[in-house]
Length: 288
Image (spheres, rainbow, N blue to C red):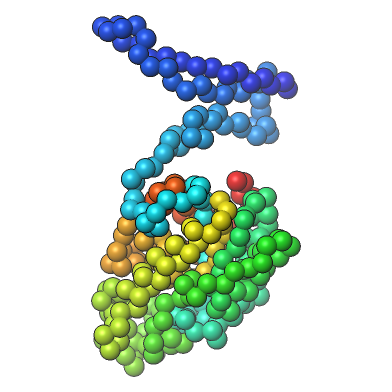
């Protein structure tokens, strides 16, 4: 098979006015003599690197700026949830506890994430310092040159006396519901209203998520990897999209799930992909 690249330009015309109104930016077209199902597809690129498949040209003012000042360059942030932990397996509420560690299955999930992201160049990796995320980050980042950076702002939400208690849909599995029925039901059904002695965990984690975004986005570099926990990931996603704590349960992230954001120089976010898990069930490889 032989291929050649052609640089083309097109113009827009209006028969009722002057013949030539606008010169569109050139596009790169790839023409091949033949193709088959085994041949990788080639995507045409337009100005701003928008794909011909429908990618956005830009997203100025699509969301509220998270940085309050201009960034030195656009950014791409890849978010990953830690692998399966012992308390995940036991259906226990984890929160900010450091007692839950990766299971053997969780280690394998982290290895799958590492393999899936192996072809992507990252400038830096940020992680929660809590054990299950820290171990996941160490596995994924193994062999990379830059040191891991641990941020307290990426820690999981603190859930007070609920941490370590069994949690689930079946009555026999839930000691939290038995011992703290009012608080547990509020946490499950209306988490934005859950509080202990006037402290609202989701309000706090929304604030720390905003702090984490600022720390990460103001770091020199263009592509960063972030490994952390489910609740703080929900908060990171929602704050990037301008959603409040009442939308906490509108988003779910699996163990090892990968989410990708792009940020323009205004610090405004565009969600590119959410909770990708193809690599959990196959040898899928993600590309830049």
